[in-house]
Image (cartoon, rainbow, N blue to C red; front, side, top):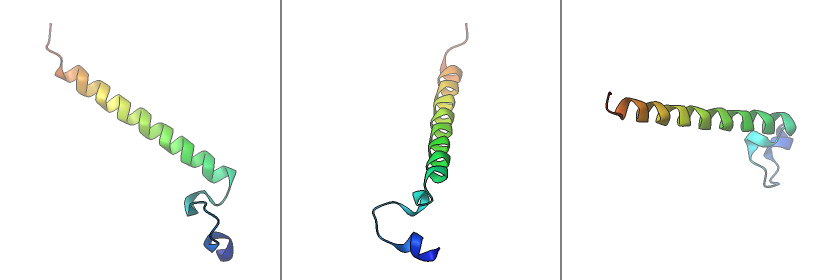
Amino acid sequence: VLKHFQEDNGIPVHLKNGMPDSLLYRITMTLSLVGIGYFFYHLYEIGKPKK
């Protein structure tokens, strides 16, 4: 198992397990971007003057 993760084939170690790692990585990045967008939306909302 260790040799599989140590071989230099250009794939980052966090993606070497194949499809499950790739899927988790993409889900994590998507949720991170959604969270950042949600943060900036609320930052904009609290910055608007009240009517």
